Length: 250
Image 1 (cartoon, helix red, strand yellow):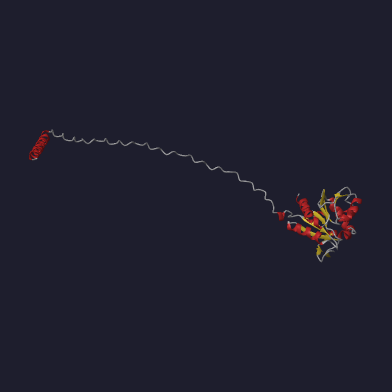
Image 2: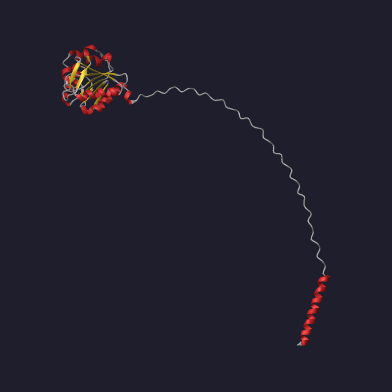
């Protein structure tokens, strides 16, 4: 064992001596190369051409021709402005057939004048309504009005007995201005002798009388024949009033 240990120590010593010699004889590594700094050429500034400002031509304002003022439609309640309407009654008139056309014409800007045999206060046969007659037919003529309305009730029976009234109605009808009669109203026209050859309506009880006078009877709310407008009963008043307005406006 001692010999083995001595031998191992001898070998280890030889290895160390050999390693030291080897390091001594080994060439030294060459020194690391030092990189020379690379000069980066300075960038040459690029000249950007400056654009000359472009002059934009200024357009001269174009003068537009002034617009003509548009025709303004009158509101519905003024369509009869300047129109004069005569309402012909006597004692015993029908309240609705008298007052409704009066108020309708006034509400649409028209002027209403109640005419009769003589001025004074008259009463309706079917209510306590009273209406003031403003002018007697003997003091007026067709040139004073644009339309004539003859309500019904018992009034027409009294009116047709008065020759001055009958002549006024006859002259007015001859003027070709609108004449509107409702219910018994056409009786005054019959007496005036203007119904021959016309188409008309009226209260059912006067159908025979109208036909005897030469008229053609139609059972309709409103019948228009030329400048003549006729209706039957109070329930027809909305269409009756509308027809009066249309006749005056057109």
